[in-house]
Image (cartoon, rainbow, N blue to C red; front, side, top):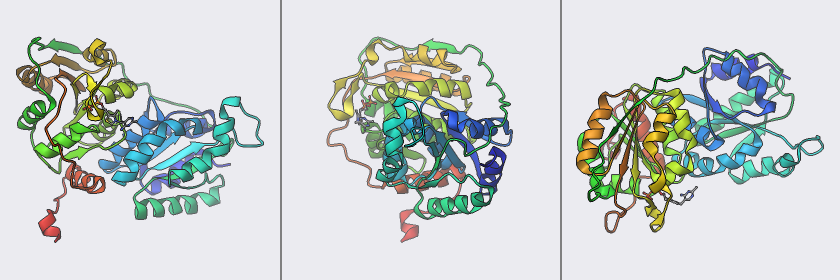
Length: 388
Ligand SMILES: Cc1ncc(C[n+]2csc(CCOP(=O)(O)OP(=O)(O)O)c2C)c(N)n1
């Protein structure tokens, strides 16, 4: 058995100071230790997949991250671990508990996952080791994890058993309750533009300091087609993870951050609105490009027509929320959001449809992530000619 302090100190010596996750009773001593440690950041996520996305955003801002969860939450994390961390080569130290360990009495809901935890991690092609539960084993175990994370630029998992970490107290600072946000309505009820026209307008309005994360599917593909810039990150996969990634990024950079979300994606991870509202980064603008359909997969309707996203955002603690449905309204909302209290949401109702014969990014996700990370850091970015 080790103490949370011992783990945090060894991990801290290697630069890990950004934690996120969802609790598990086996994790209580470690999570409570992290929450009580004012030198560390802990973001309590609404789901394990969201935590993985938040950590990915923090990594792109230069932080070394730890994601903590119960093994029953592995299911929630499979999607971003395989479709975000893997293609974009984003490492994180992933600590999962081992509820349902064969031979250990536990609740019925943990039996299957208890039997397959290590296999599931292996199937995701993530390297793993038992959580180091002796003080002398900590440094070598974390060093080995770091070596793998540095060389492969991929996550590494520790599997924690009951009692690996000694109980300690909890001294959590409460998050402050945000003041009520402000709402503006720029909707006209007229003919709606499609995504490409809105993105074109967005590009005209956005300065070159802003970091932009585009949701998966045709949104990112259209943004790439209209303008490929180092300040853009085109998510592929990890549907619903763009806002979580933007949150992790915004909490760790001075740059303005914009996330271009889809209605289907936002609905898939609606909990992220609450996390964004609670942690309230003042540099985050959430633009919800709502065409009412899953446009990228053939136009099947989402339920967004009956959803008031601006009301959701305000109820979750955003400082400002605007609704619009025209390019003029979008422009007005964008300008208003720039000087409003953030996080801010612009809910843009659009027409379905995308650019004819739409291409896909010709830069790989790993290249996109690397150049985006350099952009966020403000480091000079080598052009392809300079590399050649
Ligand atoms: C977890 C997951 N489920 C389903 C998909 C398939 N998929 C890719 S894009 C997409 C539609 C996204 O809809 P929306 O966010 O509204 O954006 P739009 O396509 O309309 O631009 C779907 C269902 C996926 N990539 N990941």
